Image (cartoon, rainbow, N blue to C red; front, side, top):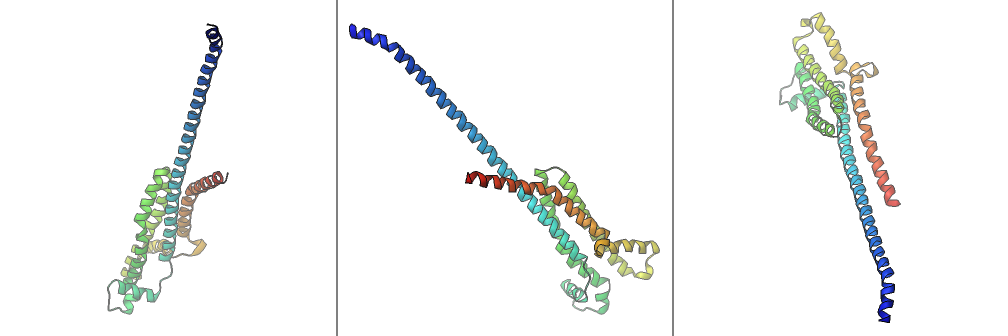
Length: 233
């Protein structure tokens, strides 16, 4: 009975301490679970941001590369015409018997422009697809900016076709009004450097695309730098 009384006296505080230990343990486990969950959510958000940033970067890089290619092909189309190029283009079109009239006339001009235009035409569907992909990650503004470059392409094609028709008709049959229009066509088809309005339009269209996409490219670089800094730390 004496020992039983001693046990009863000291069991109460021991039980209380044991209960507090259980509570503290539960709080620690709960806190650890919360910290783990928060860390996982932050890691997921960071990973998601990196994936979106990478997708935007890839879309911007593809679209911008195509815009640069289109600009270069437009310059190629507007470059001076050469006699040997006309002969080669006529042969490529399947014409075996080539005369000087063909080379210097509408046939030679049409053949050269056809070969040159084909190199640009191949880029049109690629540019369209890249624009649609970029539009998913951005706003419709990118569509409007690419449309300006596509308009330049359409005007270039129309100028080529009109010049070929004028060549077939002959200078004597062209009215004064049409002659004035040919002056406009000449600015589109011939790159006169800084004085060319069409050159300025093409350069401005590409510049506007570049300015819009630049933050996308910078965002990917910032994410990469942050990730590299996190690994080092």
